[in-house]
Image 1 (cartoon, rainbow, N blue to C red):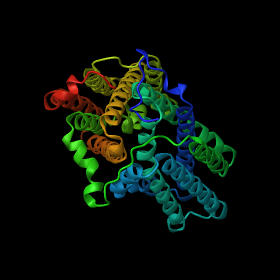
Image 2 (cartoon, one colour):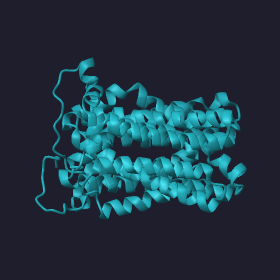
Image 3 (cartoon, helix red, strand yellow):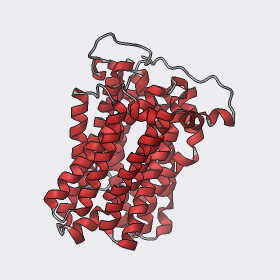
Image 4 (cartoon, rainbow, N blue to C red):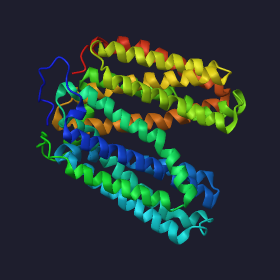
Length: 416
């Protein structure tokens, strides 16, 4: 179903009304759940086998790098070919990578103390990153083809619930499964990826305006050109990107837990969960109460609240103030994500959606990586508290500046 389909009801039906979306949502949840299980298992096993923290740091890098390397290709593929098929093939490749990881550890477990022995793991993880790079623009663009335009903000909220649930539950389940046996998480993840691929291919073929432009570098750069030419899309992407870049408080949670709040590992667990719980609670609210009007102002307000929550967390010296601050931070961020995703997907022509989504994904992913680096570097130079407080203040400053630079975004009323 294309987003040109319209509903005359003043209260658009839930995205879950549509069978195609239900299959898509479940496939996306299982995929995210499996990814979190693998993330925990691979990280733990590499460090357990090698005791090399540098190799642990490479795990995330090799999985993110393909998104940057192939940014011009992945979006074009999502626009030129059927997104459901791309999503299914990418998920299948993820399952095959998990099988390859399991096979490697089955042969080398207990004998990989030499870092030179584990290089095949990073080759496999790079292939896994390639699958994720092609999956992301396809899966994010496909949702707009499955529900009427009026129901799309609700679909965004449901999609966020899938991801937040997998982020909250997946790591804990991965740790428990690893405690049973080092190979169990890989077996479970393989089955989950297989189920996700099957559900994806069961989605009825959706209506999609595929790009018919000739293959050229100009065609591949169309996503960048469209973002630059559309002030609403450019403003939404850049505001969220700088907020993420400056709001690197979560990267410093171990420092706060150990040295400032003095709550130990159990407190760190609570701190890490607080933002996710806040986001999940907000998702539930947004599913039932979509943003009816003044979407631009709501987005700016949510980013401002996000910055204030970071400031509050940075200045807090007690767990019982830090936890609510992180909860509010997660909830505010989820409002911003909901507005941004809806505006970008609905403001972008269907035959450009994949390329725009690929660029957006790289910007947000890069800002996450650079944001953590910024926080860590500043903490090393001036201390953790000033690093977080400056980040929160910077977020507030960017929010104020962006209201002047992108008045069209600030004045945007309807998500649809």
